Amino acid sequence: MNHLNDMALFVEVAKARSFRKAAEAAGIPNSTLSRRISELEKAIGLRLLHRTTRKIELTEAGQLYYARSKRIVDEARLAHEQLGEMLAQPSGVLRVSLPVDFATLYLAPIVVDFAQQYPGITFEFDLTPRRVDLVTEPFDVAIRMGQLEESGLIARLIGKHARYLYASPAYIEASGEPVAPADLSAHECICMPKVSSWILHQDGTKSEVGVHGRFTLNSVGMIRTLAVNDQGIAMLPEKIVADDLAAGRLRRVLSGWQGSSVSIYAVTETRLTPAKTQRFIEFLSARLMQA
Image (cartoon, rainbow, N blue to C red; front, side, top):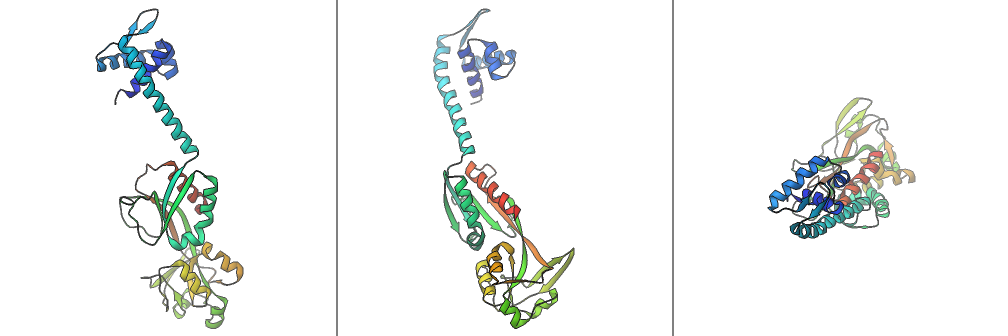
């Protein structure tokens, strides 16, 4: 296999019947080309070329080697050209693991735009909170939010979304509106499991306040729905509640404060990903980093 490049050089010499012309085509010095062909002949154990001061001719072994080598070199060149086309216009099945709520509430329009831009790609999406195994399961990439566990996988940060506090107008009317972070301790706060406090930021100031409520759950979509239905204050990314804000179903509370940003990652088994996966990650990153 170490002689595949020399094989390609031999094909150039055999076609040009000239070391000078072949060296120019290959972009290497004439002396280097001559040495490489000599090393190839030594490795094979047969002379491939008759060299004279006036011309170059193929030996019988050279004619046979050229016929076989040219086919191999042409196939390799075609393979590279096809791979180049794939990079320009990726195709194939893209298998992605996505967080359920974030995918349905926010990512769906972005994915639709990506599908329109790359019509050669088909999609298999697995929407599940389960941490799929990228090593043993047939996924090209997993999109994950929040803190990642230590692993040997490759994680690329593709977005960060700030979170804010929201409640329905009816909840605020019934329970009052908090004016400082400490007021949250007296309110119904809709929390994720194992979360007993919220950290809020304002102009370089950090405040951590204990929170509690009747509802604790691991679904962003249901947290949003409960907030819309007057069940308390929720900390959510603005993009998730944009429609509810526009329709007046939710209002932002403690408007000067924001929660810690949620990091969004594209996780793959290896850095050597096919073009379809590369383009998908790049597309998401471009859109999510703008948010």
